[in-house]
Image (cartoon, rainbow, N blue to C red; front, side):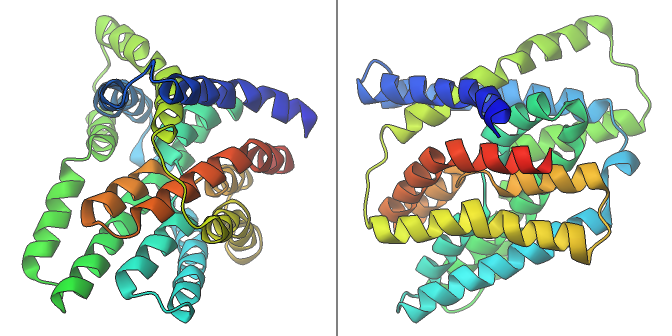
Length: 307
């Protein structure tokens, strides 16, 4: 495990540098917001487009992979929901806690880190995990929250979810890359170098933005955050490992990447949704803080194990 820990430390070191810059106010909330936008709309999108444009959808798409990841994730999601309901929480708060238990930072942390640690061939499985998270669970939480408040899921909610997905730059860049690949269009050298140069900024900027955004998070109910972090960092990868290695015949390397993705800490977009709908946002921010801090050890351990 020590060699892997030494390889992951630089990634978490950049997160720590961002956290320090945010905590000391050298990097303001406004600066963090603009850096996050740069990564989200430009650097990470360029990286994802370049990767997917050099792959074919047939090479990446695996329904066995998707069912293995989806079934394991649903099991942990239902467990977290049940625990929240037993504690007397309403359905909207239960959905947010369940989201914390299963949605990892595959975009800002998983894509750049796992592609470097496990090789560029890891990007295909990471994109499949990212697609399931965005298409299934990010849509589900919106429908549960709005359904809880309105008493029903109106057609307008489904249209709003659909519009949100089509405007997500990660989904758009992946889809555009696969379309480019399907058309068998060569990437011109200047365009390829532009994408490579812009995409290279994704890793350090995304990690720094994660740290800077954590500096503005407030803590609340550490016991709940500890449970949700345990569910995300331990139960989720364990369930995915059982599903991918014992239940579904997932190819070995793809299964390793899937397990490593499941071990990632709680994603920042869960907090964005919780704050937008004003459903336990402080509880989510605490879970992000605790899980990110603990993931220095747990992610290294999982990657060492699958390696």
